[in-house]
Length: 204
Image (cartoon, rainbow, N blue to C red; front, top):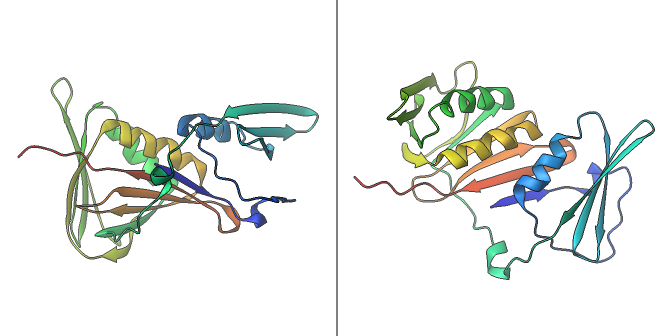
């Protein structure tokens, strides 16, 4: 699940006479946003069925009309999460990690203690990749440390984390042994983008 929160200050002009809840395919929206680069963005919703994302650059205009999808009301509820570990890193650091781990095209295991962050992935064809880094060293800032974490995320979840890291410069990673893992990407003007992925159940 993904939650995109944009404050009115994120727009040069903002008008919304009636609150709107819109369901979109995640990859479609992120794919459009990645094309923005130095372009200005214009957002427009048509009859709750289409989101238009318009890229404006000099005398050029590109419009993406993204079809909305039906979402059941109960699917929109996002529970309050109490992370066992909350870490903050630059987006470039997260992309460096994911680029390495996606080489195996396999599930990834996260083992995080109060002192160390370890991310590993094993595949029959490739072998094993393990990355270790200290908490509160040069690159990882710990925001909350409640319990050690030992979870597995699917390769698809890691791919999504990599894709979403391109949307901002700072990433917060919230890990939990029992609840979804979340990636929060800080945008401008108090806006943010959150990706929620469930841990993979692994037989002992």
